[in-house]
Length: 137
Image 1 (cartoon, rainbow, N blue to C red):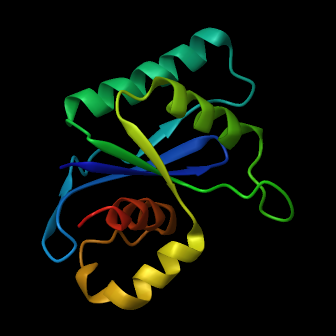
Image 2: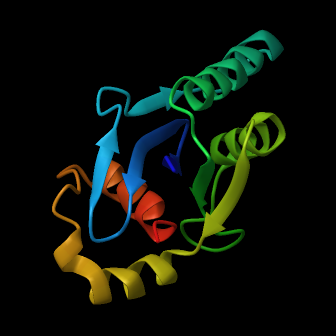
């Protein structure tokens, strides 16, 4: 069951897709790791972004998408870019979309860090990996 972790930040979506279980999983499509939507996009650019998300899900047979829960207020609150991308993904994804809070990721990391040998070294891709890892069984 391929699960795509999509970490929303600014106007980019970092994508890591995992398949398997927490103790034995593999990366799916390691070449695709970033999708972007320019600032102040036109309608056609938003449609193209939505089609890219949909095509990725269909091509890799994604069964579930996991997004980071955005802060709604205060420091670090999600800006307009993440809000727009979140809405497009929720509306256009051909599969179920779930949200995971950063505190949940931290708690899981403390319990299961030894299983995260495939975690990418870059911070944002690592966060996308953590999101996908959350829904592995």
